[in-house]
Length: 115
Length: 112
Image (tube, rainbow over all chains, first blue to last red):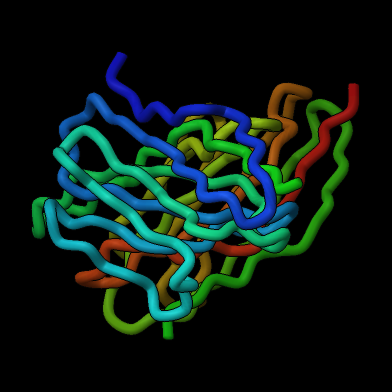
């Protein structure tokens, strides 16, 4: 089945140690998103790629960066994780044709813990 | 700006009870509206959607009607099951926008 795959499901890192989360998709969607979801809260958009164009949300900390080397893969890099960055990170994709509204498809998320 | 206000939970119902989760929105133009469901330890799954006024989205016994006059998109199900226990998010996609605005989520627990 075509899907959005996030690896790993659980990631533990040390305070201040860089960490990378990965997302891949077999849907061939042109838009990919990264959301942060803290416990009992709604997902919060960090940034998204529209094709190769990177779009950062105004309140996304500089500590968070992203790379999209090709259509299928997108990475979330956290340069110096703090305790407040412990959360579930959700990757999503959608096909935006500019005319029809397409829903976003989510992966199962990576739960990040900071020691 | 665009926003979604969702009924706060948690909601606890007995099996076969009727479910309503309220959702209202604020947006300019003609947004698209969605309900997503999140089961424990998993990502979000699209439950249903509506892209214009008076559209009714439906899936797995759940329904929601896009009411522009009341700016609402309430989720309903006539008879809930234990397997419906999850967190439900109402979401909005603004005209010309790519990102979703989510409500705060409503946790539903269905007891046998």
